[in-house]
Length: 143
Image (cartoon, rainbow, N blue to C red; front, side, top):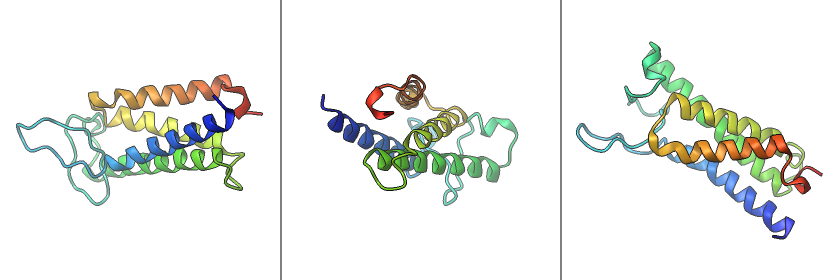
């Protein structure tokens, strides 16, 4: 695959991965007896899921929502800035790796504290991003 094509594809994947995190703040909370779907806390929603690790830590509802909101916001910003950097946006092209690493770390924390079994794909994407950054693969992205 052409390096420029790969760079663009990776940028789109990173940006999309960040925005999927944002989209989970709008998933409706399941009614009792319905299938429990993954959703994040948000400052505009008061619902929390008692199954979340963050909910079981003895934190207030406000703290659970605040922590979740902060983590998805950092995740969204990290992956979006990383993608824009890979696309060559001035000022961001040298920071894409750091931004991707911050996004992946924040996302892994978010996935851990607000876990749902459907989110395993997100964990795999984050681990792939972290491994690529650690191994400097593919090499042409780090040149």
